[in-house]
Amino acid sequence: SIPYWYQFSSTDSERQFAATEWLRENPHRLHLGIVGLQIVKKNGEAISISDVQNPTQQLNLWTGKLYSTFEIDGEQVKVTSFCHQSLDLLSFKIESKLIETGQLSVKLRFPYPARGKFNSGYNFEHHELHSTKIISEENNNAIIQRQIDNDIYFTKLNWSGKATLVTNEAHQIQLKPGKGKNNIELSCIFSKEVKDEQFPTFEKTAANNKSEWANFWESGAAVDLSGSTDQRANELERRIVLSQYLTKIQCSGSLPAQETGLTTNSWYGKFHMEMHWWHAVHFILWNRPQLIEQQLEYYFDIFEKAKATAKMQGYEGVRWPKMTDPSGTESPSSIGVFLIWQQPHLIYFYELMRQNRANKAFLEKYYPLVKATADFMASYARWDSLSQHYVLGPALIPAQERFEPETTINPVFELAYWHWGLKTALNICTTLNYEPNKKWQHVVDHLAPL
Image (cartoon, rainbow, N blue to C red; front, side):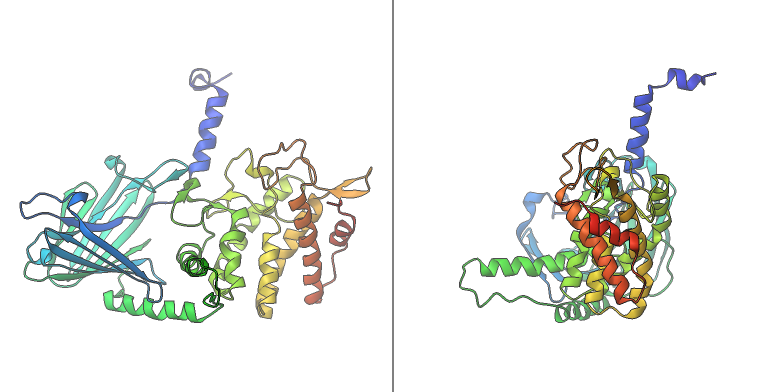
């Protein structure tokens, strides 16, 4: 018999669409919180954007220092900001007579997650769906507990001088400095657990940035276009250098970057593995391979799921996912499941690391990933008895994502990448003194021409 709820709830297509959308959206990135300023004018009214006069901001790429100034009612406000280079910690120094008069305080806002493929990451509605609690406050320190559904995280604060925490609105907490002093320093760390250790002050965070950024710029490759007579040279060099800074802060974490890689929150913040090459391979080419080694661990984390996918589809080895999350669960898609151009990326990473003189321990550790990747590629290529060649597809969708999977065969980029990937895997075997795989060789020797 058909259950009552099935007969009278929604159609199969509606249910399928809802389930698909939920799986594509979840899990998604959370916006941990916004640290800002609460400023009132002399008459007690909160300032508007038009009250902010003469704003300037300067980022020092060498020290990681972000220095901002502006004026309110003729009084200057100076804010110096740092982001710790190995901790999830922000640190600020705020200077202004408005602190002394009680007109300026620090405001923390904790949002609910935003929905939608492309979003800011925050949503200041649905106050009832999450909680914000001050669970500890003593000796210039406080711990705030956040809960969103089953996710719990903590925000720990440390500040200089006398100040008090005040909760005036839902999910908003103000840190009000004591009057009589015209500056305050604040450090704010986000963590999954209640951390009891001493974390860096503003001065130590500034020192951390000065040391780490100097080490970054003094290591690896550099570019200097000052010898060029082209009037565009200075701007091109500026963009190249700035790009190195941006990819360092946005794409060098412990997980692959989301599809767009940089600040915007795209596709719910999920990783698109065909884009991992674009967000990470340049670190090796600029001779900073250590910045992505931890990301390569992710392929071990998702290995069993990728292997299960390949096995379910009748292939050997591992079929790396397209749109995925930290657990390696692939998101439903009418396109992603047909893409294959992300498959050789792992071999590309490995080969560049090898050329960059990776040690034997690294090469031995990651070779099983190379082997499993090549095993899939060789088994995916289909023997065509009529042409006496191995062919790719159908069904597949090439990198352009605009051709029908039922009729697409031998797209040029994928065919060339398949040839390069399997040939490189064979060369890696020779380098490591392993027996070359005969199946890989047979596919390379008989792959369809471009």
